[in-house]
Length: 468
Image (cartoon, rainbow, N blue to C red):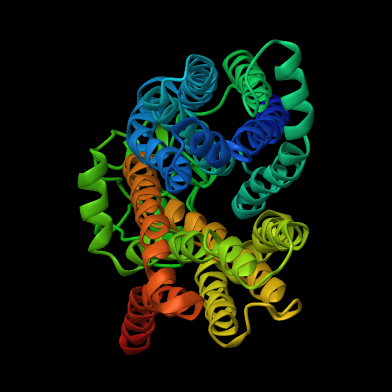
């Protein structure tokens, strides 16, 4: 009884700490969503107005996405070295600095500084993506995907509220004597500065890359020799000690290899590219990487060209805004459902479901007329829904399919690859749209899903052929 009381108190303290950390992540994601959406809503128009070249407006999104790709790996390294709260604070602080640079550049008319500011602004998106992995580290065992989905869901509020604040921000900027279209970045700077202070002062988390399941004892009462194997349902390898004396009970745990306790106490970090190479050799982790990269690449490539495609067919800007709102609702609004599904039926099945939804979305995009007010919104809504399934299922699988020491470096490398692919997709989609139309954009998106399908089929075949 005396031993149970301290353990119960420690459990209650850990649960409260987990709940506070998750609440801070959710609130912070809401603020960050407002910061990103408020500024980026008018970024393309601001760049086109400042440079005098309409085509340059499309580079605003590319600069932000490339900025997110550049800082993803350094933020992951910082999380391993100094903690998630430091890495998130640095990411949001860089975004606040980027917003200030955009304000200074627009006020002075120095266009190159705008792109530097937008690249720094992208650090906020990179920090928001890292927050989804942080949510799994404070989740109770079996609730990792649901915790991640709640953090992503909070982005919905920010993404919807941000553009609505653009006009108010413009009026505030005019009152401060700033040029037109610059005021929203004032709101963004304030939102990201608040996010920085919030995570720096209130967010306290376990060591980055360590999950609650890493410390789950096995049936013998000792720590798991390989928590990843337990999560995947594989048998944990045991050593072969000699027969135990009769005085020794059978519950004595098998010896644990010397290198493994680091994964349950403090993971020894590896390089991001080394972690990516190592994960690429394993079907499950490779499938997770492709789920994240392919889902995001397809979503960005089709989404950025949809407004142009719709306006070319005479549809109003109000209808374009409605379609994009449906798309965002599919991306983030359904994330709690996807998190629940991952925890109930498994991440691999949810990734396959997301891939199937994406295929349906792009097929509709290929066949539907550009002025169809029913099928175009349906395609964009399904595009967001498929992205949500691929992102949450892939991110959960990525987290649970590798050792603790490789998790954070691999997360950073995957997010960097995802953002680089998205930036290339956004840039090339315009060329494809001009040459082959919107159907061509969706055909290319369909081809992007082929590697994911191939690896998934290979993984299913090898599992079926494995001896029982």
